[in-house]
Image 1: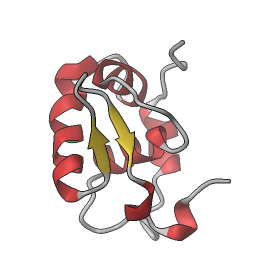
Image 2: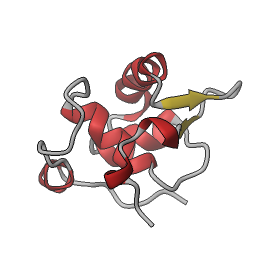
Image 3: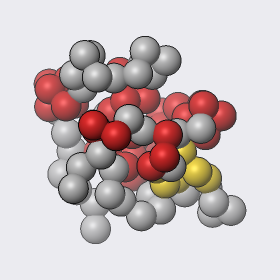
Image 4: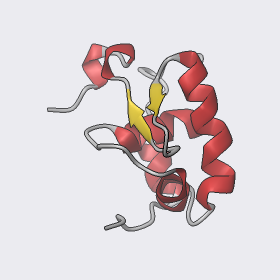
Length: 94
């Protein structure tokens, strides 16, 4: 089941520039926040929710960069999951 689409304003409210690591763009931080607490997630779902229906064409390249930076894991199916040890402790929910 896919969550409802987030508006750009909702994503912007989630991204507090005071805590966001400087090496992450707003789009990257939005993806990391969306994946917090989720299991393996397709780039299609990520793009549809985080960027209002943009799908995998938008999300895949960003997720691949996050894998290189060490924030996400990618499985053989091309799905992504947050690598929690890389995200600042104060931003971990729960």
